[in-house]
Image (cartoon, rainbow, N blue to C red; front, side, top):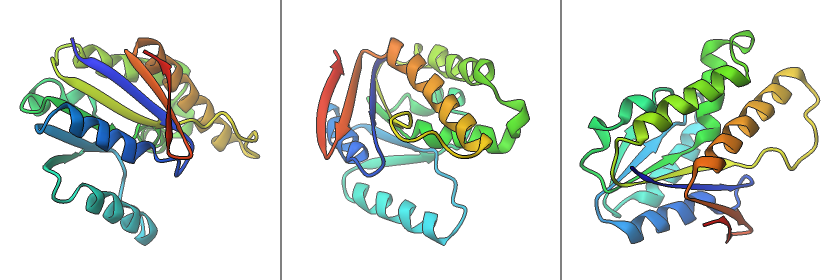
Length: 178
């Protein structure tokens, strides 16, 4: 079974950089799973900056916005460590593509459990990056509240099964679970 590490924190907290460095300490055989859709020029710039951060560091990259379960075990088998960045965007993609009315806590749990089950067939380390979205103000609109709640549901499920949970705040990792 895979060793599973969940890294969470606020936006721009340093969680992705921390995750990259952690993965690089584990093995030279590493795979980056990018869940971010390229929707506009601002997002293209973000993707470019993240790609440049990995450049020359030996990362293989797979872009997968929805089907994380489909990566295990075949597409990840050559890597000793898989970094999925990020779960928050994955939830966004599910909500956007499925339609707000078709996604609830039960569906997001089922989708999470599907790739967790497949992940169990992998023998390396899986590191997932996610945003802690529940520490801010309550969003002012229905879809934003639903999104926040779905991410919270997903994070709770992943946190419970993770071997380690690390909160990154101000670039400083804080171990919550080991």
